Amino acid sequence: MTAVLPFPALAVDRAGEGSLHRQLYERIQDAIGDGRLPPGARLPSTRNLAAQLGVARGTVDAVYARLAGEGCLVSRRHSGTIVTPGLTLTPTPKPASPTRGPPPDPGWSPLQLGLPALDLFPRKTWTRIHARQARQLSAAEMLYPDPMGLPALREAIAAYLAVSRGITCAIDQIVVTHGFQDALNLTAELVLKPGDAVWTEDPGYGFAQRTLAARGMAITAVPVDDEGLRVDWGQAHAPDARLAVVTPTHQFPTGVPLSPRRRRALLDWATASDLWVLEDDYDCEFHYSGRKPAALKALDLRNRVFYAGSFSKTLLPSLRLGYLVLPSQWAQAAGAAQQLRHRGVAMFEQLAVAEFMRQGHFARHLRRMMLAYKARRAALVAALERRFGDRIEIVLRAGGLHVLARFPHADADDAELARRALEVGLKPSPLSGQCLSHDLGQGLLLSFTNVAEDRADDVAAALFRALR
Image 1: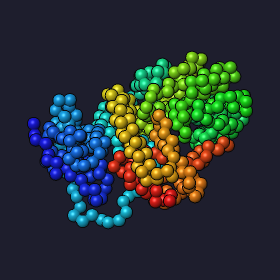
Image 2: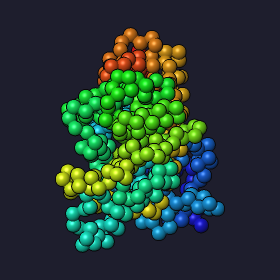
Image 3: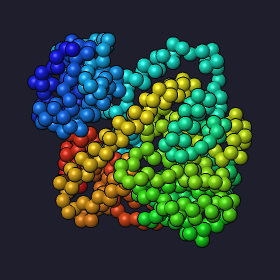
Image 4: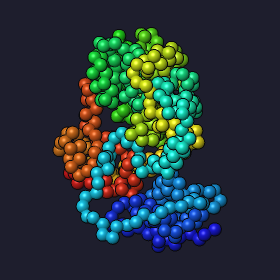
């Protein structure tokens, strides 16, 4: 086997441009492209390379995972990490004199909510699957898609939910949607009419509240405490509600799981009062300590729960793909509604996601994201605590994609703090902006998904300068 490339050839410059992750990624990619790391060449272990370069092991893990996702590297149990045999890459030409100026706007900012780790997306695998699907596209797959969704994708979703969330359902109960917005609109069309009362969490997902209000619904903002949605409060203030929209696994934005006692109370109340529940399980995959809370749908013995999932937090928001698991009695009505609402989700994207799941890439991608997110969260929290000291209070939950930071000695409200952060290129969200009627105090919601470990201190320092 070809000898490993010497460590100096992979060295990074802490004073140079770009993060350590980016520098190491580009150096390995360049070495593969120009033949210094030919197919089959063995790379150092992540532990050894991290020690030699003086960087965090998590940085090397993330770079290796990214290159493996792009098809450049492959990990073998006995021979370590090697360049993919048979791989051919064309070296990327470098301009003789790079143009100076600000970097292009990536369209997102560090600490921004609602985004998965874009650098962890397995581009190479995804591109290969897309290319294969394009070559093999049959005549039937060129026609209008099934309004309920591609059967192969619905089968893959059903298998995934059975294993990961304990939800047993037939594929005719699954609708492939254009993300959560589409699932919310379909649920509303099935069970609501203008003027109906709807429970939403407070604080909660403002988009859902605005969507329902625009449909003419009477919104009841039900407060959230350390056990999640206050079912008793909702019963007292809106006993005739027709729908409750909840995030029981990791409540948005507090991260609190709905307690077992409240889960039973909500399901019992739904059965007794003809209430329907829409469970938004938007980030259920990412739980870092303790046992992951069960899906409310898995406990739904009387078919009162609509279950919404999304690929926006696990793959890409731009896919606009999600799914809705229907109570069995609504399957036929949903099929008729889909015929009138639209002619289905783009077939090509459904084919690609179905194949991505069938080949096991989705499960591997989730495991890789879990490890990276746990490390990134720890790195960002540690960096913030070093910078701010006793001027910050960080609320950590067992799962989710962001942390809540409170600043007890701040000289301004959280909306002003968020505005100051935006001026230095950061985009946290104010906690107060998620509240309708019930005040949970001041704080900033900080997403860690796109803050690599080696960038955590830079981000914390920038936030400190902006807020002080």
